[in-house]
Image (tube, rainbow, N blue to C red; front, side, top):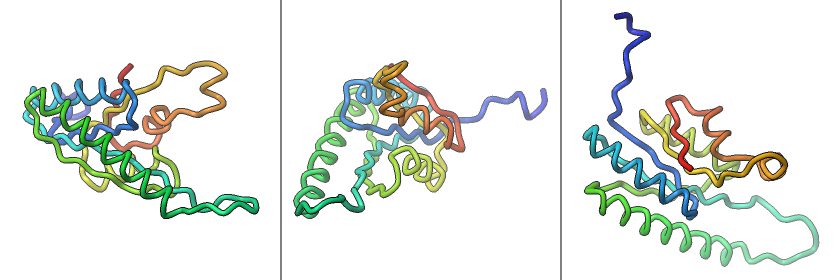
Length: 151
């Protein structure tokens, strides 16, 4: 059997969450995969901080960032609870992304030697996907490792 046909070992799994129900399903599946492979589970939430807002509007960035951080921490706590219910003690991380969630996820996964990225999708298709874009699709495109997209 050639090395091209070998299945890569999964020792570190990253699940990226956004607070949605699909993200929690992704955490559940990633937790089961981690348990079955005796792998480490990393749960990541990317907090995208706007660099600026155009117009003559005063925006209290500190308050916005504080609320975003609190929401992210809450998402991570709920996701960690899902993993713990599956018998996994995850490592959670909130990161600030200044570009896009997908590029932040891909960069984090590479820096942390992740073997598998698991993301949820909202199931948008057709015209909505064109308008809104798709973090899951972009992660698949930019990731250095395998990506599992959960519906």
